[in-house]
Length: 294
Image 1 (tube, rainbow, N blue to C red):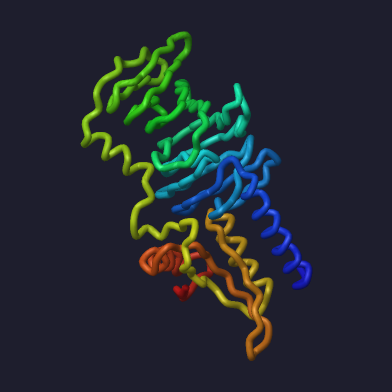
Image 2 (cartoon, helix red, strand yellow):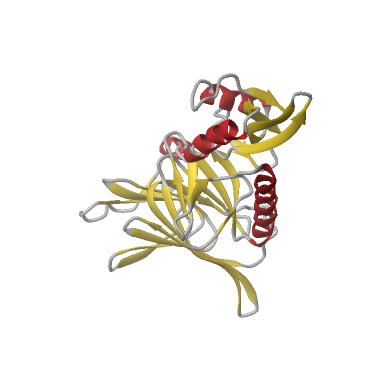
């Protein structure tokens, strides 16, 4: 790719991303890589901070990964490692003169948490449906954790109220700190109270861990992973990182020696997080000595 064409492509991508984010129903707030988004077209890219997500998109997280997404009403969606989340019916509508935020979130696998922000300025209503494998929960304002794995589906109501459906059975859960387990190909277990200890353990599966090298929206730190005089060499590292689920950027710069190309990952919220990411990637994918800076 020629330099001029490459720079033009970067500018178009940045402008398109900014416009899409302004119109987005879901925006990426935090990523503990590796993680990807797969669009309806089949195009696949690393999950990037500030990225706009739309209908038919699928989010994938890898081993040890986490993702933090924000709905238009301010509600947060958290994903744990090795998860797959399919998005649909994302929108904002007027129903009986009220603003209603809609979403269908299909948790194909992995751990998931949906949290309504208490301090959000949103004054409308929510019509959010979460499908956790074979179990569907209807949400209108609450805090709920769930998980789909090869043996069972779990729905845990932390606070608020949800409607739960599995097959022909449907009921309401409105007791805080209660959970429902549906084993695969077996009758579900009765709703029971969850201990704080168990909830704390489950919550860790969807929280971005401190010191794990996670990117956050508004983060000012970055890690320069490679610097090359040859554009093809830089693009090689850039492509390997992105294929591996890391939202790398490439920046052409002028130096005394001529044109150079820097491959970096930005949006780290602190030196600690930047150094953690640098240590994680050092020695892999052609990365020798990553450098941390603001």
